[in-house]
Length: 273
Image (cartoon, rainbow, N blue to C red; front, side, top):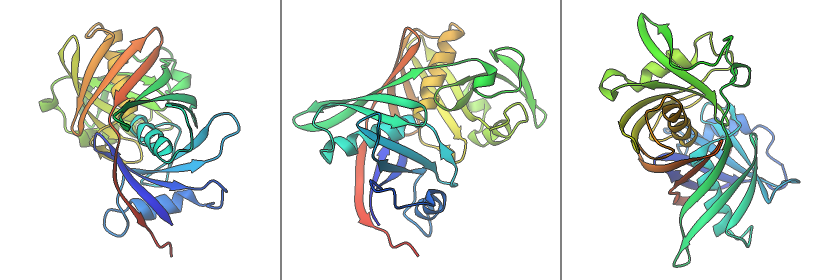
């Protein structure tokens, strides 16, 4: 199997092509490829497939073999890959995802894709959409987990996200595991610990559902900005610092734009057994 290893602000992925749909068990393949000791090592795989409704289709499988409908850092890497492989002629790419068709804009400088901007679409605070077992929107709501109190805000940003505001010194990223598996979230949730630095700057560290602590989470960065804006902490245009770098997030009406880097790490061949 030929593959390409890529990363976006440290969130790393293995891109494989399956235009003929010959790989049936993507869960097993992802678990093997993403193993950092016996495989290549990554937070997930990005599978290239044909689409009937867009230029191309992206399928995302987490490192534990679970399916993800959307990934912000992943789709930037995917868009760069598709553009550089010349699957599309335009700098604007329509990508089919589990969260609908997303528009990727390649920011070209001197013939190279320097960064990628993604229209991440609309956010949704409705509990049934997240899904969350709550009668009303979860906005700065107290949640007690393992004898510790958290004030959480939850939404759907392509995938479920829960944001906890406060100093990063007060939280370990691993605390997100207990929140992810709380009965409030029947399908789990990603957990973002967000520290507001000023009206245009925040820091985010994320526990990703199905992957654990990662150096960056694109959808989590978007969700954190939306939540911070909803609570009046920030304006609509924010720089988000994550352990792996920085992303630029902008809220435009009820949609979110995300701009950030995507880099090719190496190409290779993996022998499936």
